[in-house]
Image (cartoon, rainbow, N blue to C red):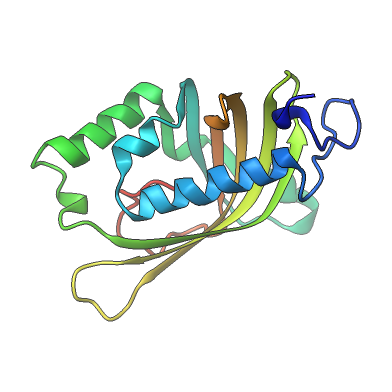
Length: 186
């Protein structure tokens, strides 16, 4: 059994991957390193961790009563609706041009990734990963900072000794964002 497939609780699709198993530890390492790359503005390194069939979205939210809570995520409108090509274009614009005013000078960010839950996906070597994210973002010389919290729903695909991010859906907790722009990656 490979290290990527070790630590699965059962062979069924959707089986949880046990905390502390080699797969779980590999997923944590991937997520923590990803957060560090984004915080350190190593955007080209981050792009190298993305699958070429990437889907990267952040649907909007609406406040709904408890009986209609499942309708609070509105996938017809998105804060992000990107694929591999558009992410590469955004990174290239940020790192290789002088026209990325929204992030020049760049935001100072700190990404905290917690409550990581890993399950097998439908294909061998693919894992559904849910995690909570809290991003602090500071701009210019302001004494205030933005807080962005969300649940992330990822699909990670085994790739060598690590993973590639194949899908990310970011479910922001806020209906109205308290940040003037969302030019950073979540």
